[in-house]
Length: 167
Image 1: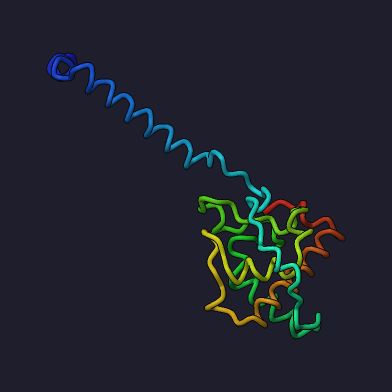
Image 2 (image 1 turned 30 degrees about the vertical axis):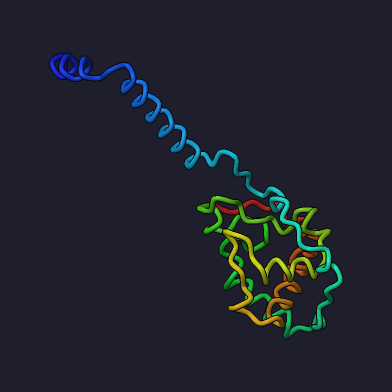
């Protein structure tokens, strides 16, 4: 061991030594940031994702009928639940691997948003959330909004938004 040390250390100038030391420091910090998710807070507000003001004037063309709620639930389960979780808490399985935490749909900021704002966000998307305008038609997006509102009201009534995911 001392033989390798005696050969390598004299070859390294102070400049290279500091460069390597700095690189190791950056690598350690980067790994810790990824593992500990420094700066990413679960169930934080939706990172101040603000929809344009005109979206507040958008009104759903569908009524809260069972068929629309069933379709909204089906689409939510297929497209949204994997990141936002069953209860919309932002604790879906795929959400843990994202650089930005999925929004907690039960957060007071989201609860205060208009239906048109939610429609616009689903339609437009914002990385890492995809845009659904090519995958879903407008009626399907409104059905998802309707279902999200149902889940939010159930969560508020039952307090299930405070449930933690079972491990």
